[in-house]
Length: 282
Length: 318
Image 1 (cartoon, each protein chain N blue to C red):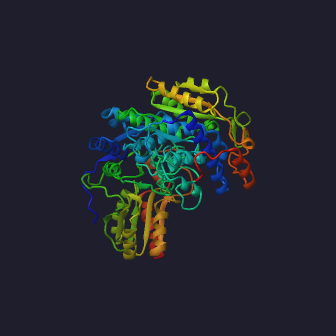
Image 2: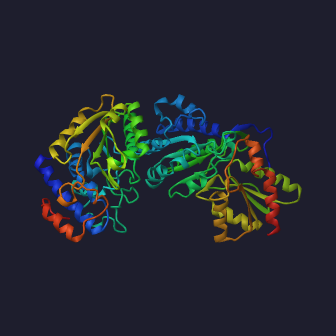
Image 3: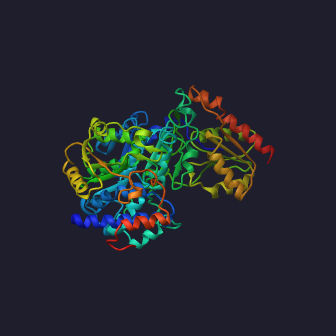
């Protein structure tokens, strides 16, 4: 369990990792990664009960996490490495031929911590439900977490899954929506209005927890702990977490420009000047 | 002469699946069933009644069902997801690709009502493309048993096999002629009749038609070797090459599109290893239509008489 300051320091280093990884790979998705840095850090270091040193695919008695918005691997891999799933130096290999750190999460390369491929959007909630249902069948009281982009909610399968989990009372599941209101072709309002998200999830039988600022570490920790306290009460939990795409780097923030575009060398230098090295670069 | 048991009963392959699934559930407590509102139609009701705590009703949502099955497989469950073949393959191809095949999960995709013999419901429900879709996926094993008994055994074999499986079978009652006690060995071709003039390689419902064709050909003095390929992938290339070398002419027969089915797989093996004149009995490049199963098999040229004609054709170029 980390203190708030420790979590914040990890998040600062993770942001450095994100811009360095995507710059070196000359590809990848820094925007959403920067926006979800507090969430990913809090989840892996303080919220989830999972031991990186003893990772198993089965995950019996452990909490599980599925990242349905598979494109934000920079933040996932950085946090996993910093958490101890694999050596931090391996972040150098992100997206290069032969790497375990595939552009989108893969089980084909035996990277500890990854249980399912994602990248084709809209599928991770169903997977998380399956894992949660299987845990219930086995009398395993641990939890299943998932993360989704808000644009991803345009996929129909998400709503099949939302309906299932509400109907079948999958109450050992916490699904978080990265509500950054940005997607590739513009804002979510321009592309496809999400409407009243909270009312939509509630109408399907979910309990909703809001995090007003998902880039405030204290709010993220409190929100996820509040969500955990609501499990086991007959309803699946949805955390609607408002974030800023690109948070932490002033010129990358609040725009969709860096959704799938890495920083150039000049931009990297500017970004790193804003991001202190707290744990040591890989 | 081909030995066929007397008084062959008629039985639907999907019932073989349903009974096999109950037996698989008895043998292994990790076997779970998932259905998308067609539980009775695809004969999963026996499993649902016998093991209600291991059955998941997913509603009319095949994509979600696939993700749930993949998630359930993580802690050692062996999920069998069932539905109409079109709706558990073509409809959700990308889901199967990402969370079953690419993620290499121990999920069994079970497609009932496959092919033209689905019958009166028409082309929306008659998949003739599913074998091609599924065999194109790395990690996927593709099983197409030929009768109810073999479907029963294929279901048990799928449960014991660790990895993604597509199990394909049909709706109507068909001759149930294989031995229920004969174990299903994945990847092993079955030579049902030995002959030296031509090889007929068939799968699914067309295996029975191939046997009938061989009987008719024997009366003409043509010795047809009949091979049942119940595993499209991995394909028993060795058995196919050996028979082609022996007879020098090959006819394939399947209730599937001419493209990407058994015929393509066999042609690929032979072209690369033992170029052999071939002829194909399969669905032309078109969609099906409403009719009874028998009418449709006749209409689209999937009967024993069509196999006999294909043999005559290939023997002319042998």
